[in-house]
Structure formats: structure tokens, C-alpha cells
Amino acid sequence: MSSLLQVSSLTKKYGNFTALNDLNFELESGHITGLLGPNGSGKTTLIKIICGLLQPTKGVVSVNGNPVGVNSKKVISYLPDTTYLGNSSSVKEIINYFCDFYEDFDMQRAYDMLATLGINPNARLRTLSKGTKEKVQLILVMSRRADLYILDEPIAGVDPAARDYILNTIISNYDENASILISTHLISDVENILDEVIFLRQGNIVRHSAVDDIRSNEGKSVDALFREVFKC
Amino acid sequence: MSWSLDSDRPIFVQIIEHMEYDIVSGALAPGAKIPSVRELASEAAVNPNTMQRALSEMERRRLMYTERTSGRYVTDDESVIAELKKNIAAAAVDGFVAQMKKLGLDKEEVLDLLRENY
Image (cartoon, rainbow over all chains, first blue to last red; front, side, top):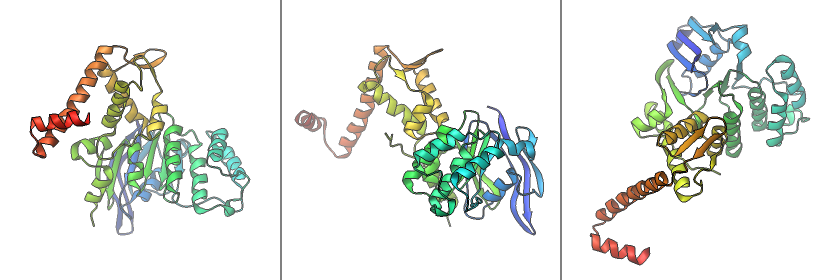
């Protein structure tokens, strides 16, 4: 197991507000990591810095030994927490667009997943429900053969049955050496597929451990531990 | 098929228990080929690394073995399976006895109940 993502002394301030406070951690390749924390704990800020969409105030993030930049973006497949696809395009047009844009995009894989979820490739995006749009976005992201998938709230808007399918898509569609970083509030839905979790609180990592260690040492689920750690 | 795993106990332990039952009950026959890690992970809806860990542990306990090129198999050593069956039964009986003691039943009463209901 080699280190895929290294984050060292990472700090991000918005004016006087410290969103991330001197974070240090590494992610190994081949692992699925849950990034968990209450609202406003810095999850999306951290993700955006890893993806090169925000500049850190201090510290370094590197992917496969390269600093965030062209080379890191090539190997990261990112699902943002908002929609960014043009509403007037059809699903098919967007797939072609992704195919042009990313050399690691696997078109067959995308069409297979669309078929299983019963999504018509000719449908215009504006005719799709919110949940279906989310599914399309996730399919686009998981159809790349990336080294690191970063999923910001991937299942928040979809029904429980589709959630199961999506989680299955996630575990059966990533390569052995690829890693996944998932940020979510729906801990009980995802915790069985996680290797490890990072708990963020007010920009600090308060816990980074293997999920089965939590279960053996604490005798409780990750969901229960989260509720305890972040009790309001 | 769902494996109904609890979230508050280590998943790999529960996978092992699940597969041990399959071996003892014959659902996984001696010498049968085990599906790939990925297939099993997908079936159980768990992380492939966790499945790998469970299978490695079962190999360590000699309940499975790997053929270098062709995959992983259930042990064909009947004595290992018989031993496993005994251990699982012993653990279940321990739990049962403890529960009966809690209910305040003595050995004879429990044996009578067993004879009536078995």
C-alpha cells in the first residue's frame, strides 16, 4: 500500500475565520475513506483544496507525489455537492463532452450504468428529477478510471433503493489501486463499505481510524460514535 | 442477497461467521470454489478490502486454501470442518446454558425441555 494523497500542515482561512486548522493526514491507495463531520466543519473546503478549486492559506497537498495542479487533476474524479451540468443538454451530449474532456473516461461503463438505473440517454437534463440528475452526475464521475474519486455528498438526494445500487456501483467500479474519499451525513448507509473514517470538527481532525477498529475498540457503529463525538 | 451485517461489530468478523455457517451447513461444500473477492464484496455490500481480510483470516484458520492460479477453495479436510462445527455448537450451547441459568432453571429442567422440544 502506497500513499496516494498527502496533506501536510494544511490551513485555510476565510478572513479571520479558520476553516481548516493545520491538517495532516495521508490516504493510501486502494482504500475507501469517509470524511465525516457536522455542517460547517470544513469537509467541502478540504475537498475543494484537494481538487485545486481553492488555494490553501498554508500547507501542501500532493497526489501521487505531485502538488495539486494539472497532474493531480488528471487522476482525480470529483463529484461536487452542486449541479454544474447544463440543463439544456441531453445525457448523451454530456457523456460525449466528458469523453472529449477526460482521456480516462470509459463510455461503455457510463452507458451500462445508465441502462441499469433506467435513465434514457436522450433525455434532456432539465426534464430529470433532482435525484436522477444526481445519479447522472455520479455515473459520469465513476465512469472515469481515476486514481482518486472524491465524492461530496453522493447519495443525499436519491431514494434508499438507488442508494444501495449506487454504493454497489462505487464498490464494484473502482480499481483495486484506486481510492475513494466520500463526504456524507448518511453514515449508517455507507459505513459498511468504508475502510476508515476521518472526523472533522471546526477544521480539526478529531479522529482518523479504521472502521473495524472503532467497532472492536468501542463496541459501537461509526454512526453511534459520530453521534457521541458530535453531540449537540 | 443481503448478508444482514450489524454496524456495531467488526464487519470482517461477521463475514467470517457467515461463511463458517455456510461451510458447516454444506451451503459451501468441501472443496468448492469461492467466488472472487469482488463478487463476494458486492454480494455482501461491503468493502473489498474487508472481504479480503476475512478470507485471508479464514485461510489462516485453514478453512480455505488458495491455488496459485485458479482461485480460492473451501477446505476439503473433513476433520477441520468437523472441528469448526463442534466449536460453533459449543459456543451456542454456552450462550444457551447461560440464558437458562439466568431464568433460574436447573439442569434437569433444561434437559426435560430439550427432550420435549428437540
